Length: 169
Image (cartoon, rainbow, N blue to C red):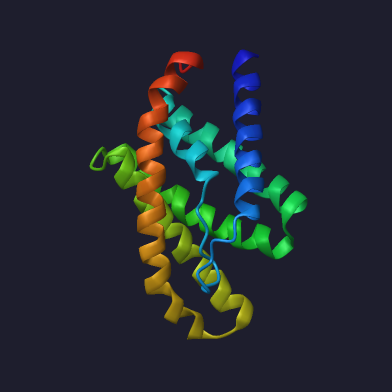
């Protein structure tokens, strides 16, 4: 029961970060560039559990609920579609990278940012029915590296506090 409350709290924090992100005009004229603030919760959940499989399940649950709820609260059906596509790609890569232990938390976060943008670009190609959106991909990859690194650093700084204050067994 206690863990359910903790996950509910982290979902609420992720929703607040989604709302804050929706208020920040951070596009640089390129569609799809975002800070990815709610992904901080995903990376923290991936690393906070003693059992990586449990962390992955919890991160998947919280992120999926966050995407659907924030889409209905602050976005649209298209924003849900794009976010889910990005989440599937980034989550799969982050869990794989976390399991192989080849990457630090920063590296896992960077991979998540990059593959989130790749997933969204693939959906955009399908929705607008053109390959022209691929021209944005190099810029989106750079943005994914930068924002992923920033969130990874923030995650490394916050993880000890999360482990100290939230049950992680």
